[in-house]
Length: 507
Ligand code: GLU
Image 1 (cartoon, rainbow, N blue to C red):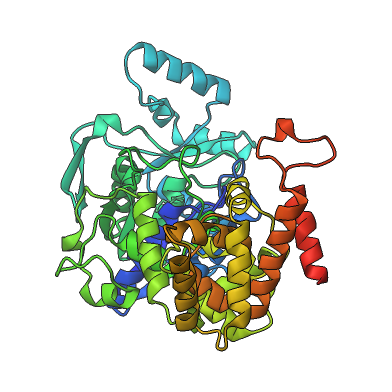
Image 2: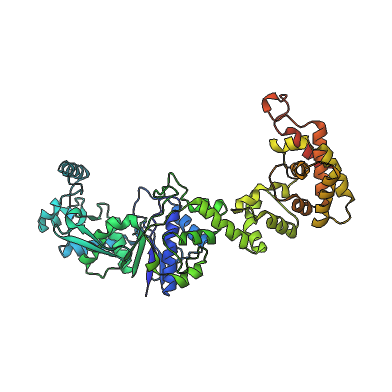
């Protein structure tokens, strides 16, 4: 049976690269009717962050990439945290010791530093010269029994080469003299990544190790360990790393790699997954938009290419926008509502919300974009500097439209459109924009919004009339100058607009 695994280290924010690997692990496991395991590689005590495990689980669950086995779900291979498997690694290290495939190395930190320095002087950058191999077995036993601290190191061959068969890359050969005798068990009794990853992948019956290409250089060590234990190797698949828009490896410091941040910014999990699915992989028919299920149906590692994994935020926004446009509006509402509530907006009527979302979504790229139109949800919006400029020249038109809207029998989109057009025609020589801009400023406080006919019709007559009245009051009472340095001290930027809003509410 196919078994894949993701093995995050709980050392920081949940990383977009973890989602990327999990997606391929998940897809392949599901396609093969296999199992997708999440194992927590928490043996690096210095970098360990207590919240990180829960955060990565939550992020994967947001994406819908639920592992079949994990520290949260449990499973036949429990425990799934490496710090809870210490005993298992120690037993395996002991086995290699007994078979003469590993040895105890008693060097202190200072001695190791001196060895490293010496090797570097000789132009050999491999960190350790294997001197612990020469300690006789009985001496080694005696020193260990006396409580002297030691590490367990693997005996790696000095000659020849180690071959990694990577499904995507073919045969990768590494000269053995470049592979030092790796530490398997540290003096604190904790395993290194190498020992833990190999022992766990074997015991958990992982058949396909799918991971980022940054792990390719360590793969020979893992191959040597499989050989030392006499175990069959898994299929090695080192996927291309994600790069940013300028072609550099995504970096925690320079790029946004935190999955939670994508969630907060209002990306839809299905859009993010679809986009990640196009990173180094393509559908047989070349289509760019596909669901996880479609990916499962069509997936094969043969279609993974080693280039083309540029993770471009602009492209992701484009994917997200498409998914936003295609959601049924009631589903869209379910996604947007938490963002609107978080922004402090309320609405009484669900149909009103659906109308608002419908009119906003052609321009929206993320769920947070919907929160930038607060005027749909509150009367206490202020006027931007640009909007104030438009209001200032628009008093006459606003009065005219106020009268026309008040007289309208039926306040539907067609009548509203006719009313605006009639009004513009009656003012000879006037461009429609000259009327629409002050109207937009009065109704939204901004100079950017969806079409006025739609906005007027969604807001409804009473809101429209009250906002026009408020804007007119603001104009007569005097809108503040746009250059704050010229304002009288007691009237801050936008204060007049806000005052007017308060008056408007009282009406
Ligand atoms: N713990 C490693 C990581 O943080 C796992 C590498 C692997 O998949 O072997 O990515």
